[in-house]
Image (cartoon, rainbow, N blue to C red; front, side):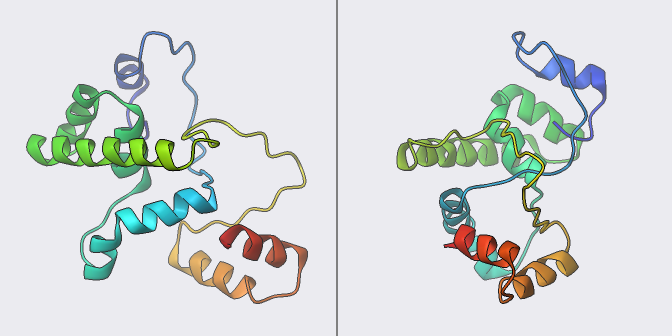
Length: 149
């Protein structure tokens, strides 16, 4: 959950969640998940219309109950039927991912250590910088090319 109060987060999370922390605003994906995401969102990408954000349109429907997701999204101004339809789409996508990539966890913390690479695609300028980086001869560039497949 992102951009909700502590009280709302506690109310929306399952009872077995014992701690709530601050979002760092970042996540990593495998090359396989990225390929599946590109395929899933191909109609929107091809049309070059609309906007989706990672937290409300991907992580929240993948990790919350439908009732909690619809509640949060209607508080953000989304029609309940639209939120419910998107939730259904993302849960079906999650099921396809888990079936296609059984060796991978869909969601979880991963220890990265001190020697990791960080390629932030959160802004257009960073997207450009990292795509240019992929043409470089550095170790980071080689790792990025390997990640991208």
